[in-house]
Image (cartoon, rainbow, N blue to C red; front, side, top):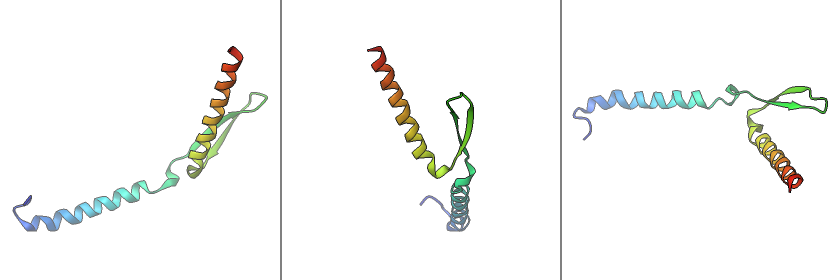
Length: 79
């Protein structure tokens, strides 16, 4: 056995359960993080746009797609 005295388990198990609950409550809040994207319009004015945390993955994919298109256009211009 790991513990020689079983009475130690009465203190350790509730402490571990409480720590697990505290950690899950701490990291389950999705409103903690705020995401912004800086966008330039055709007049070169910067606009700061707030992104919801649930939409971050979708916006990230759209930005990656745009950058891939720009890269392909630059390659076609130089080739």
